[in-house]
Image (cartoon, rainbow, N blue to C red; front, side, top):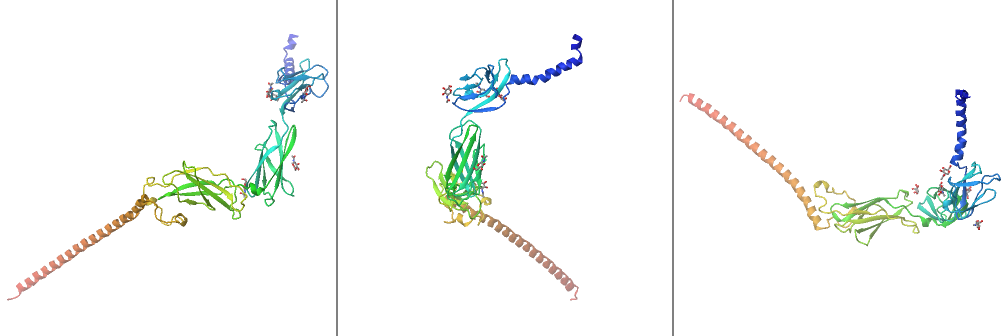
Length: 403
Ligand SMILES: *[C@@H]1O[C@H](CO)[C@@H](O)[C@H](O)[C@H]1NC(C)=O
Ligand SMILES: *[C@@H]1O[C@H](CO)[C@@H](O)[C@H](O)[C@H]1NC(C)=O
Ligand SMILES: *[C@@H]1O[C@H](CO)[C@@H](O)[C@H](O)[C@H]1NC(C)=O
Ligand SMILES: *[C@@H]1O[C@H](CO)[C@@H](O)[C@H](O)[C@H]1NC(C)=O
Ligand SMILES: *[C@@H]1O[C@H](CO)[C@@H](O)[C@H](O)[C@H]1NC(C)=O
């Protein structure tokens, strides 16, 4: 017999048996959960121990522990949790009196859906986005079905993003005065539909203008140039004009000054010299007076140009005609004495250049004069030499002449 037990064939059989039995033993130990059951919070929740009628007494465990919340056990082995609260959630398993697992289920508790609180955003004429929040927290996963229609029209699906809890409709019938949106929330415990009615043209609210840029204007201590871009969600088309409101104030002041414009950029002429200014811009549909202003763009902080801030040199002076006319609607003269003194430096610089040219011309003239003088002297010298030679020859001739 011991020889038989130690034979390789027998060992293999024993190993195979233990290996093939292992999964079923593990199944019993790990309380593997076969399904999920949903129940209402604060109600009596009934958990059946499997489908078939069980006559033997059963034992229930929650999360592998025999400690159970407030409950009662019926004669057929059903567990009824009384006024179940959050702490009653978990893995429930029932065993027979021999410790064999009969059934297991995961219990999740929550509420059926309630009404939703819905709000819609209309960032342009071709898009509606409606988002919602639960008025009552359900604690359970939900799905949503949403649709939109204008008065007397067909329902159109509103495409749902479950995670972010919103839905989108492209190209809504903007000419319809009143629209209805309905959203149906469904979870394991029920479903509920919420409807809202609204006027798209009253909800129209552009996104804030983008890329706001506020710059100093060199040489002008009371001016600021404000530029921005259309919101990227707004079509760049003549049919959809926007009006922009720019507001600004010296930092620390409570009073805003305002400017309206249809176009970027805009020049502020009455900034407080030497002070940081806060600047913001917002937008609204120019045609539709019932539409809403966008949110303000983020605050921009900037200080107008100052004398000391940039040392003057001919390079950083703007060339003439570099700015369009609207930069200089009142006068093209500098605004303050500090500026005057700075701009006065400009002719001085031009004068310096003139002086250099003058000097060059002068030295050319001097050089020419000196050269011509030398030439004249040289010519005269040569002529004199010639004359002396002639005199000499004539003298020789005279000497050789018979007297
Ligand atoms: C829950 O069960 C208890 C005991 O059977 C009963 O008294 C109570 O009314 C039940 N509550 C609900 C909400 O059904
Ligand atoms: C409940 O069962 C699930 C599925 O088997 C498991 O992932 C989870 O860890 C279990 N939870 C507890 C507390 O036992
Ligand atoms: C059981 O486990 C679940 C997680 O699966 C947990 O939420 C719950 O509080 C646990 N319940 C008890 C009584 O430990
Ligand atoms: C959503 O609602 C529409 C219209 O009310 C309906 O036709 C569609 O079947 C619904 N879809 C779901 C998933 O409930
Ligand atoms: C309108 O706004 C939506 C959402 O921001 C955007 O996806 C869409 O491109 C915009 N339409 C136009 C014409 O800019």
